[in-house]
Image (cartoon, rainbow, N blue to C red):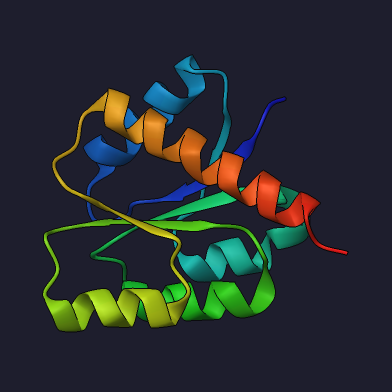
Length: 128
C-alpha cells in the first residue's frame, strides 16, 4: 500500500528535499506544503496519512500541530532539537504522535514513519 505523506520543513530546504527523496525512494507518495495553513487549505486534495512538521515554521510547531489535529485524524511527526521536559509536554498535548530529534539518519526516519503508520493502521482498524 502506498502512503500519502505531507512534509512541512520550511526552516531547512535541504532537509525537506532529503526527507522527500528518502521517503520517495522507499515507495511513499510525498507531497510538500509551505506551511501548516497550506496543508489545512489543501486537506481534501492531499489526504495525508501522515504529516511531518519541522520546527522553525512561521508559526510555532506546537500551534501548527494543534490546528492540524483539530482538522485531521492523521498521525503527526515533529522534527526538532532535543526538547526540554516542558517542550515534551507541549508536544504531546498538542497532539503529536512522535518526535524525531535532528540530526537523524535516513534509516531511522523510514523506520519511524513505518512504525507510526503501522500503529495508526492498527488503531483505526480497532475502532468500532
